[in-house]
Length: 341
Image (cartoon, rainbow, N blue to C red):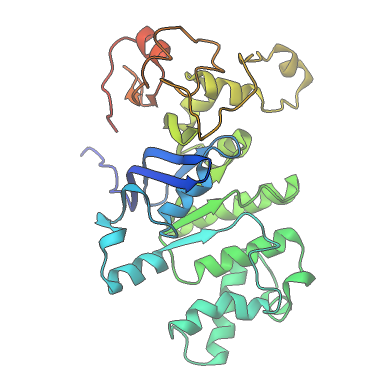
């Protein structure tokens, strides 16, 4: 049988960096991040609040311009696109915001919200055609019967229904990439699972690539089991690889700490679960980052003269499909290829 080749990435971030100038000093929100989103695949970006996930997502969507590095869509640099290519990019890469209460205009009906882009770009010719398309999109996100939602306002909907409307709006332009920024974090658990199932079906049926932002590794495990997880700490990717490897056999101390913090519903397994104790619970200031590995003040594997001397490169672990940025773990696994994808 011929060897299967991996599809080319739709969206790439290469050495992407974002620095904000403040009165207290420069804030390095994103530090040289490399990420790829492929058709029909999920890349989960995971980390604590304030680690740079949303800043990375906004750069990927073209909402902000990186201080350094590149964002490429189908191999073309977003910042050097002509107007036609830029328009195609803006239609193909859609953003789903975290807050379903703030992301919808309160004075617009569901019909007006979902069809705004279609009417703006003259993709529908009549109101009848627009309503039919809106109903089709609502059916796609499991808001049925669609006719009962079209003329409602956001305040007449539940949180889960509002987020489904936001997803329908994102799907209206026929996107190839969806960037979901904590899009389920403000919903109840039962609604969250239902929405994740809807997103999973859309991924499979429409072959849409996902950049899925979350602080919850349980959500990442559920939604991206067949995809990848990239773990971010203070603007840097510290571990990245296939989801089963990251969840079942984490290698970076920070990843282990995140996984140990996930609640275990089974009391027996909860008693057996190992808790990772960090050296400190304090997150360093972004205006005064530690030398060397930025995680070393909190890391249980810290070795003086090594971890605080130089920043570890993101390198492939021998015999593994993951990349890791840790001097101690990389040394224990033997030499690896630095900077490989």
